[in-house]
Length: 353
Image 1: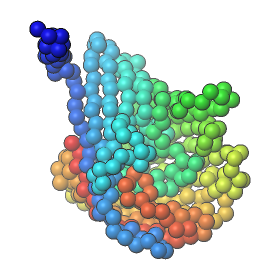
Image 2 (image 1 turned 90 degrees about the vertical axis):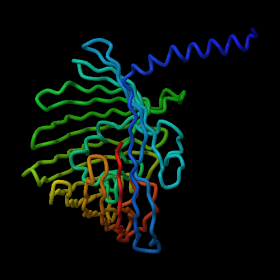
Image 3 (image 1 turned 180 degrees about the horizontal axis):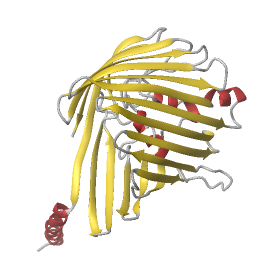
Image 4 (image 1 turned 90 degrees about the horizontal axis):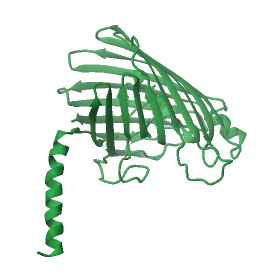
């Protein structure tokens, strides 16, 4: 028998032995197909219809019980562009979204990898139009002072749930490739959260030092949702950011510093249909860099996995700013025009599996 045949036989035997182990692992495949047809108008020269893939994804996750008090878990998640099939907006080819491994037990949980910061997640209670036209990040995530990030090389700890309260603390060394010890590229992010029957709330703080690229930024964020009745809830949001970068002018630093806040509501008009509205404003520390955004929409759940919706959103810009209601979490994101009113109408389909 030749060496090649010996090797082939060994490979087949090894594969056969591995299959039962894989089958015993608690691993699941999940994903989201989220696409929309949008009419976008920047208020100046752009007025077109687009097809957009909105944070569509495919993932694998699982866990393994080591003992009754300790479980290992993992997740690998990839962005999928249903409109063009291309890689994600950062040019990455694999594991572009939340990807991590960790341990959990009575002590809470700890994980390592690349995933949403606690500050980013804290917007959740007020996030009525996430990954859609009118997403609040169009006003909260601006320029080099932006937060709402998915940081690389992150270690995060989540406390046990104590009467609805829990805390999250994360630390990221980000790139970690420079040899210059005088350069700081770290991020610390934490949140205190509450989830009850009627109230859901989060308070978060994040501080980022990126001497090599984007500068230093500190932010505080609060978000809350309160169910007045089973069919109606109010949401509120507040964020303040301070941006410092010696490589930028004082005007740029002031224009990216400031407060963003908003109010919204969701009204159920049936067991599967809801009307939603959100108003937000960005109040910059610099003159003529403010913007207001209004979003209204209707969403109907066909079943637990599939929903359809229609949204209208507009951003009213001051003379020196060119924000739009479509720049975040979407493959169709043309630039805006300074001082103009950018508006859009979107009809979307989301299928979670």
